[in-house]
Length: 251
Image 1 (tube, rainbow, N blue to C red):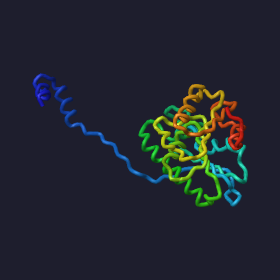
Image 2 (tube, one colour):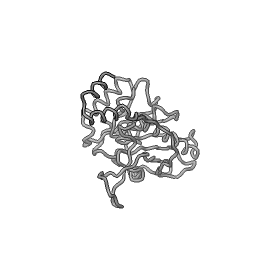
Image 3 (spheres, helix red, strand yellow):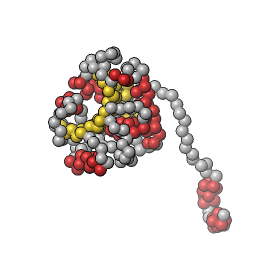
């Protein structure tokens, strides 16, 4: 109050006005509401008694489910249903403020740093809903459930595996690492088979990053399989086939 009195005595009319505005400035608050929205997914395979595996595969930053799913065509067959949920947040990948046209490329992201905890809560519930939707059509007792995350989708799958009540049989972390805020003790994958895969020419998976990922699992006493393949930041067809082989070459 003394500071306000001093300004009134010595300040100009402009200063007096600034002080008055500051005192009466409304307080900005933030809230959240839950809304219902429609999410998109793509899938390969046919539901039926012949199915032995269900894959839920989460794409990377800036990708869309349909394009991402094409990477799994080399392992598509009658025994396997592969579902690619699309992240809830779409954007124009090429950037800029517009205008955009039919040639502008669109991608999606699972989250950004903005309001990240809310986005994480949303995508965990979303993946649970995808899981429940699939297993209303498939007998869970007759199939293995595989969850694969690629690039940004690695963190997505890790957090979903840690928080879901669904039983996941095999977690595949492809071209990405467990987020640093996720503890490995107790085991967030709850005993699921674990594979981590990195391309030899992936600029986001330099040797020191791969080593750190290995050491983190080893310190936690967590068994895993490391798959190193010839290729970059990608789902390489032969490497994907190698994941299916129990005695495939590891590095």
